[in-house]
Image (cartoon, rainbow, N blue to C red; front, top):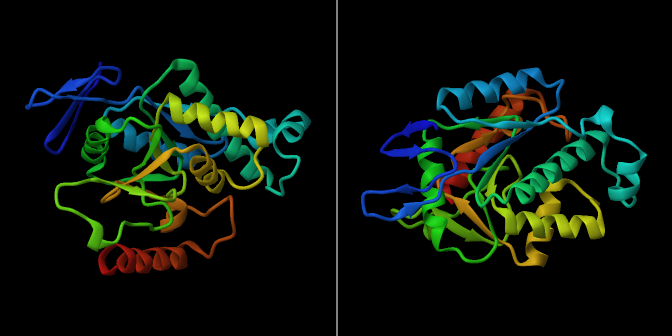
Length: 258
């Protein structure tokens, strides 16, 4: 068992429900998967240090590194794709995480990419997202990161409310989903393959298969390859100092001025 404290919220155990002060049960995580190539040691050290500091256990998805890809993968998933080997690897790692969620029958799993930067309010935001999602009956995904600096406009935000339904995803650096949404994504991919980057593909799949998308406000994860902490390996990007300035400018405009 793990005791994890964050602000005014305390989670006890990752596979148990917690009863809050009002007597209601709040679902907590079954587990955490981290998308990480074995050779990306700096990113692995970074995310391990963050999660260990708050006592959360995790598993790395180390299968399907670039050097592990083969003709079977290409013929099965990438026949009509122009993705780079790095993008193919990333996509198959996310797919492997989905398979494990279905295999283990998990209801609430968090998937993080290895460049995730957790805010000081990460545990509180995660707990509150899970608590608000208890009334959701349909398959759904909770985006707890800001993705490419995406925020619900201020005019739609309500004090005391954390989750907002959206018609689009928020990239794939930090999201929570369960067995039903995972199974729907897998079924689509097994039928159609992986024609474009996995975060964009997930958005199309979710729209076609009726998976509801919710954004956490404010988000509690930033993507390190977007905020200038790491260089992106999936797409071209400017030097880190320039990327950091671009990210901060977008964040100010989209989070506080919209």
